[in-house]
Amino acid sequence: MNAQKALSLTVPDIPTLLSAYMPYLERGGLFVPAEGFYTLGQVVNLLIALPGESERLGITGHVVWVSPTGIGGRRVPGIGVHFSHQDYPVRDKIETLLAGQLDSAPPSFTL
Image (cartoon, rainbow, N blue to C red):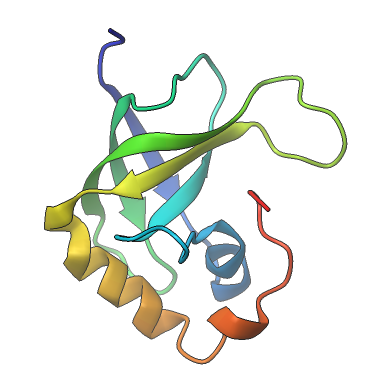
């Protein structure tokens, strides 16, 4: 079993948040650009700063998507992190920031 990893993410603006957010996951999730080796199901601790916010929010989630280093095309290496049950407030904050944009979102980092 792999050890937990800690990552930090600063989302500079709403379009980037829209591209990184994974609304199709039950509890929500985010794509996090990351180098290194990750496995599906691995626990990740994430500190995230949302656009316009100075406070970092803590998230603990599981890796559900892996775009490995060296991936072809225009894909960014990184992981998709599915939020844990206790992270519903973060998901709600993200969805409030993205209100009205989720249904017409441009291509994301994952799909």
